[in-house]
Amino acid sequence: MTPRLVQESGAPALASVLDELVPNAIPIDGGWHIKDLGGGRCVDVMKMLFNYRIVTSGNGHVFAEHGWCYFGHGVDDDGKLRTMQTALVAAVLAAAAWNGVGSPDGYDKQAF
Image 1 (cartoon, rainbow, N blue to C red):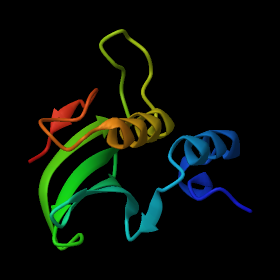
Image 2 (image 1 turned 90 degrees about the vertical axis):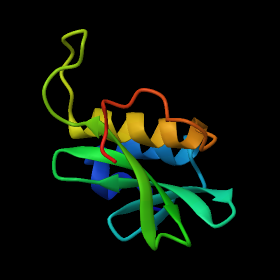
Image 3 (image 1 turned 30 degrees about the vertical axis):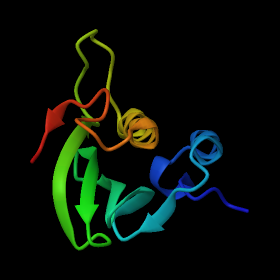
Image 4 (image 1 turned 45 degrees about the vertical axis):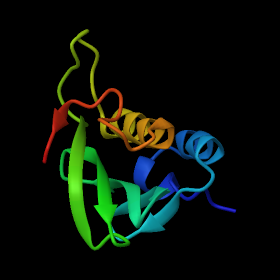
């Protein structure tokens, strides 16, 4: 069975690890549905042009409430190179661990 995240990450080993850590991630148009928060709200990870974004949505992905970016370019505060792979890992793991209150851990910018 091909790991669900293998096509996006470009690294089969990375995708396999993410699939094991977040086994309930469901592919959706433009990203992955990570979890339901209740009350019709959900947490998704969406691929953007230069980053991945955690998005909270209401009414089953109909509208986005808030979004937090995980940059896939440049360097971080410690001078480490950012890539789309590191952004994907950071966003997926943060989304899986987040309870939907406040902001998820480790984001680079709140988009909206």
